[in-house]
Image (cartoon, rainbow, N blue to C red; front, side, top):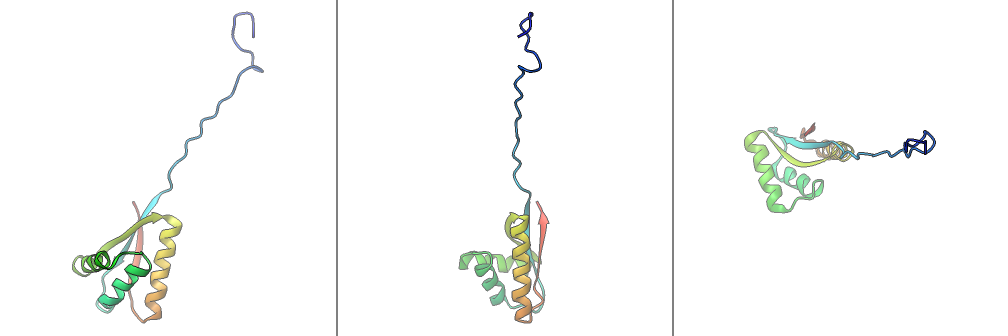
Length: 104
């Protein structure tokens, strides 16, 4: 310490406080169309989004009546994977089902 009690440059302790931010979240939505069957949408909700049958049916009805519905909220990578999986499964069955993601 110097004469006046203050620490010199060598004696200063540097403390760094790291603030951890939560990752951005994205809503994944299914969009209504006139061709994809309700059964297929329910199956997508059960398999891709792991929804129980009653909840999957309710979400499917919201898609049908309101034009779109939220399937879940995820980090970016997971949301992108789910959107891609829905598109791949729908195209494989010949359905034009659209799934999008938007930042919360």
